[in-house]
Image (cartoon, rainbow, N blue to C red; front, side, top):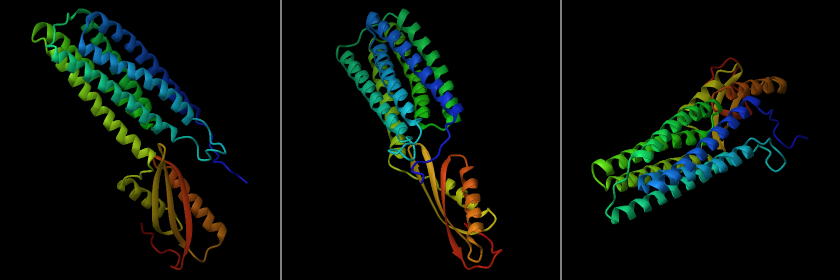
Length: 305
């Protein structure tokens, strides 16, 4: 009797996950230390807001490492379908860290605005912000490429957060530079804009991860593709049910098909196996379950979805 799902670990996929975790953790730690030091010496609110965002990035990096490590563990008796639900759970924690960074950035910006603002020397802060934008841009492209390769929602959100950090660093740069040469309150205004952008990114990330945690289904287009794929398998007379559900970031499909009621059990099982293989070959599908029902229609009847 088999009690757990038989899964062969994908060494290439795990290697890409580890690479993404290393890039994210080391990159965010470097930026958090550099920005925090520059914000302390320059007293820039915009840079402080960006540093708070980087500190939250370090926290979520640690959570991401833990969560992805849990998600990559093989199935066991307590989790017979695997541990993939841990991945979006970590993604939801990431959104909370992002929201806290937005709160800290907004609070500092409001305080500086009420104080009337002040000019910030553009030397060190601008150099740090430009270096941060360049490093985050590199991290964005690297993580986005890995996320696409492993179909990971958590890494996709991490890549999106990196892109947000590029934009917030540019906004902070404009605030620091503008407060010195144009208007003292521009530093506080830039800090507030950074906070709003962080809140926006956190909301989008949270909504996407909730989809994976609450068992949302596939898009209409993908359901229709699955039905057509199953119907094209020789021996399938009709596909009358296609149910899909995300288990963590993995999409599972449940299909009911009709076959000729006159064939034997062995032939029906072969058809079901062929349907399962065809559906699991569709991009985005992790597992397919096929239920076979007899149909009295004569053999050779056209299949319909």
